[in-house]
Length: 392
Image 1 (cartoon, rainbow, N blue to C red):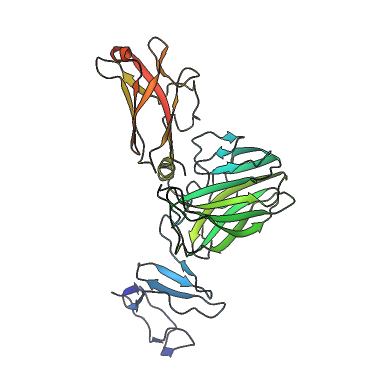
Image 2 (image 1 turned 180 degrees about the vertical axis):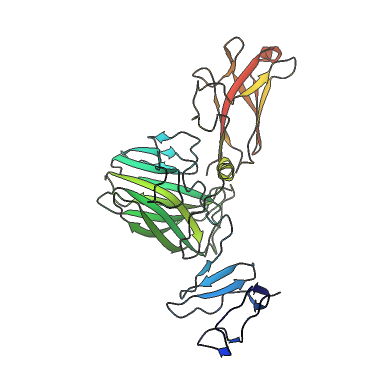
C-alpha cells in the first residue's frame, strides 16, 4: 500500500528538473489533481546529519520526523498523546486544599516530607491571561511552609502499567513559577514492578533539575526510559511508571505553582493536550469515584444531595452503587452518613441511623445491606454516600 499526498492546484517555479543533495527530484510542474507517492517505512530510516530532520510515513499510518539522535517524533499526534491524567488540574474530587500527605488533585499524590508542613491547593488562572498558553483554568500550588526531611517533599503521578514507554524516549513538560528553594528541584522517573510473587526492584532515573522564579516558565526534559527486558512484574496488577517532581535537598521551604503537565513519546514537547472534561473525569474515575456532587468534598454530614437511597419494603434491605466506570481494581469503599458524623445510613423519615454491612464489591459495583434484620421491613427511606478508591 502506498500513502500519497494529493497536491491540489499548480506548484509554480518548478520548470525542468530541479535537484539538490538529499532532496526529491521533480520533473516539470505538478498539475492539478496529480499526486506524489510516499512509501511506508516499517522501521525508521537511517539517521539524518546533525541539524537535519527526516520526514517519513510509518506503517501505522502516521507521519514522523527523525532527528540526528535517531529519535522518532510524531508530526501529527493523535488524541491521547499525554500519558498523564488530569495534567491541567481541572478535577479535584477529594477537595481543593490539603495539608496531609496523600492524594490531592485527582491522580496527583503529594508528600509533605518528614517533619514538614505543606498546603496543597487549587488555584485559578485569571481569564485571558497569556503567561501560560491554552487558557488553562487551574494550577496546583505546593506551599512548603516547613521544610521536610526524608522522605523529601514531592508531587507524583503513577502511570498504570510499568510497560508504559519502556525502552522508548519520552518528553516531560510543564509550566512553573513560585518562590524557589535554595536548591533546585529534581525530576525523577521510577519504574515500579508491583507486588505479589517476586517482582524486580524499582528502577529510578534522575531526569534532571530545574529552578524557577516568580514568572511562569516552561520546563522540558527528554529521557530514555529503561528497557524492562529480563525484569519480573508482580502478580497483583499494581505495577506503574512513577513521574515525580521532588525537592533535591531537605529542610527547605518553597512555593511551587505548576500547570499543564504532559508526558509524551518522542524528544519534542508538543502543545498541551486538553481533553474534553467528561473524558478526563472518566479517566480519573477509574481510580477514584464518589456519590457526592462533583464540587462537594467527601465528608460526613455533607448533605443528602446525590446520595444513594433504599426505599424500605418487605424484601432485603440493600443499597447498590454501580460505579461510573469500571475501576482499575476492586476498590476500597468508605461510607459517609449524609446527615451525621458517622458512617451509618440515615433514615431521612425519622432521622435515625442504621449500620450497613458490606455484601459484595468488585470493579463494577458495591452492594451494602442494613445490618439489623428487623430493619429489613422498615418502610423508610435510607440514604448513604460512598467513595471508591482504586489508586495505585
